[in-house]
Length: 496
DNA sequence: GTAGGGTTAG
Image 1 (cartoon, rainbow, N blue to C red):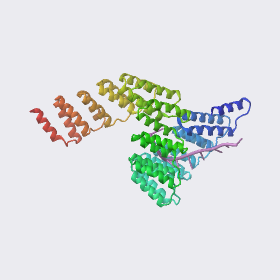
Image 2: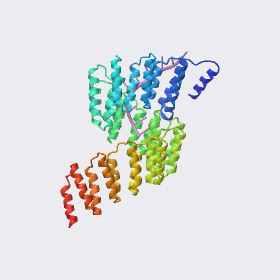
Image 3: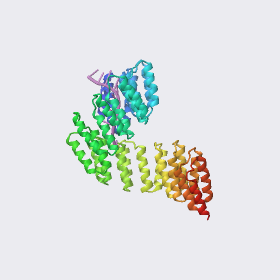
Image 4: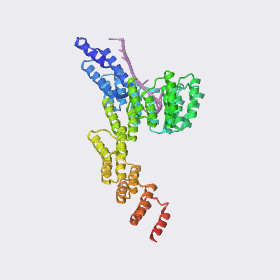
């Protein structure tokens, strides 16, 4: 692309003005690069938007297709506001969005969990007499599935397949994937039987989905048997088929079996992707073959398989466990060097590494500097550091980070409070545990049996009967009464 | 001469 752009600049220098076709060719290039994924993705949207600006300023009209390409890219990075502005812009210019344009937006929204907004757009397109097709329906179905609302998804699916004569295997695949994601392989298999009864031809994705389902339920035999079924249907196992099985082998610690599969796929000229290599790296890490996995990371680039965040996170996590934190941070720096933005998970792994295997002070420093840099973090970054401070007994720091977590607007669950209270009780820091317990109550979260047991035990150990009664009263309020009689016995026992 | 959308794996 760089050369293509340079060439275009050359054209202009020589007085040859680019025209609409020139721009479309460049747009296609950026789109392809975007599809290839990895580090350059976001940079390409910017280039694409720049091209649009340039075209508009030169008085060219973009086509509906060019707009769709831009919309597709924006959706992939969840930039929906900008996408909707572009949609508005195309309408203002007299370009009528069609079923594909709408499907792109609907799919983008669904994929990122914004099903509600997707359905609004869906209704809008229907009002404008643009008829939804399989692509549109598939997007909505996927959205409902990914929200985990499987029964609603099934209703939607059943409606689709009964109201139409022609059936679409992709809809089946999406529905089966929904079941598999929830670990319900049985329902997925039933759907598979249903589609074979209806003489619908399964695709390789159908089988990959089933294989994934079996692997998830530790039914490796069944997964393996599907390889023959694939061949029976005249299909060829894809890179996803192999990678799924390799991952399953990796998970059960059969690294040799995993490598065997890698050799087999290469022998059959199925090219491993960056996901495949990430699985292999994970396997090597499991065997503590860190040098080898770093070597593979380098080899990937040479083979044109750009490692992504997950690839790096895998090795970084292993380096942390091996207490080689400097090498872990070196890889983090390498990500930046390659224009690969570390993900929130990368930082969770590094912070956890410093907390558990390094110096807690460095973890504090890292988190604070990330906040300064406005790097986006997940709640886990905070819970990790809070837990570490609780475990080491530095409650004041734990409280500071806990409040920061609240301020950032993260939803605090009972599990987060339990994690803190458990650790404080373990260190007999009763007053501190009570502090968090009260905070939890004022947060509107009711305690559960487990958390109360932990605290009661701790109070008992310290002979703090006042606290015992106080907590028992609170338990009565919350309806956690089942063990009250036993506690009374305890009380009598300790009074004798 | 150019040109848009769905499902699967880490």
